Structures are given as structure tokens and as C-alpha cells.
Image 1 (cartoon, rainbow, N blue to C red):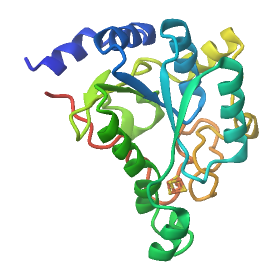
Image 2 (image 1 turned 180 degrees about the vertical axis):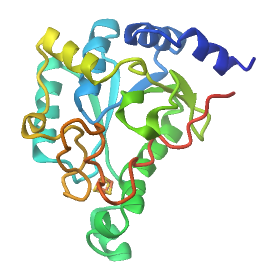
Image 3 (image 1 turned 135 degrees about the horizontal axis):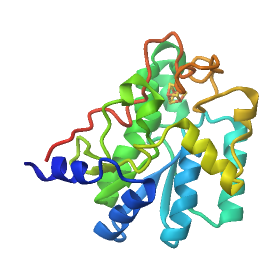
Length: 234
Ligand code: SF4
């Protein structure tokens, strides 16, 4: 059986800390995390703080984040002394507007996500050549995530590690409550998933709907592209 499939069988029922522990031990100093500082990410960051000193976290600043998100992220960096690095798009907004026209997020959100999220992370991955990238994806977040495995390979052959794969939304908020973690204030306003501020990219969700139902609602788009093309094979 291919190695990755075997590993995923071993980690099939693993708790988040077991998967984090496996990642840190398997690739010391060769693993990082990406986070947009949403609730699931905060849970992972809180766990990582007790397991690995100074763990590198990368925040993709699309230039379109809510001010509340930036303020909240800065507060946590300061108070938790996090090792956070900000990634910015390769192409400036001025250049994007010149080449593709203004309000790209409205008329071509796939291209907007590619320029402002996917390409900056791709460029960083090529430069750092790390072995593993941790993210806070969960299967219960959306239909598109139901097939996720604990560890997958992206199109560059880099491992994408999903420690929260076996948790659902209730687990996340129970952990946040149990540990008294601060969260992005936008959750209190009715947002269930928080991305960029344009209303066509992030809106409030109906109670009981998928966590990501407010993302690009009505646009036929559910994912930004950062987590597409993941494979469960060597
Ligand atoms: S979420 Fe919206 S604004 Fe942010 S990069 Fe994607 S399309 Fe652009």
C-alpha cells in the first residue's frame, strides 16, 4: 500500500495533538502553519504554543481583510508572542487594477483569489522548501472538504497536514470556551466563516447552514484554491 495511504490509515481517528505531534517530530524545523486567524486556526495555534516554541505561522494578507481581523491577529501576536510572518501578493493592487480592472473580486473572484492568496503562498513554498504545511481545515466545514485526509500532498509534492480533520464545529467552540480563548469579534455579529471583507466574498450565514455557506454566496465558488488539488497518494 502506498506510504501516504498507510499513514492516513494510522492517523484516521487521531486527535489534533497526535497529528501535530507526528508533524513536529517527523519534520523538525521543516513544518509551518498557514492561518487566517479564524476559530479553528486559533485552536491549533493554542495547541502548538505548548508543543513547539516559536512555531512559524504564515498569514496571507490579501489586502482585503476586515479591519477587525487584522486588529485581532495583531493582538494575539502581541499577547501570545506568536512567530507570525505576513505574506503579501506578488502583484500590487495598483497593477492588478491596471491589468484586470477594478473590483476583481466581483467580476473574477477565482483570479482574485489566485493573485492574492494562491500565488503568494506558492511563491513562499518554492522559496522555503518546507516538508509540511499545517492548516485548520475540517471535513464538516463544507461538501468540498468531506474527502479530506489527515495528510495529503499538494501539486508541488508538499505535505498538507490537517490536525482538526476529526473535529467538528462543536469541538472547536467547546475547546475555545474551555480555554477561554479570544476570537475574532465578527463571530458575534453572525459570521460563521471569515475571509475578505467584500460582501460578495464573506457574508453572514443562515443558522444551521454549512459553516462556509457565507463565502462567495451565490457565486458557485466555495474554495479559494489554496486547498484544491490535494492528493491522498505518493
Ligand atoms: S476572498 Fe475575495 S477579495 Fe479575497 S482574494 Fe478571494 S476574491 Fe479576492
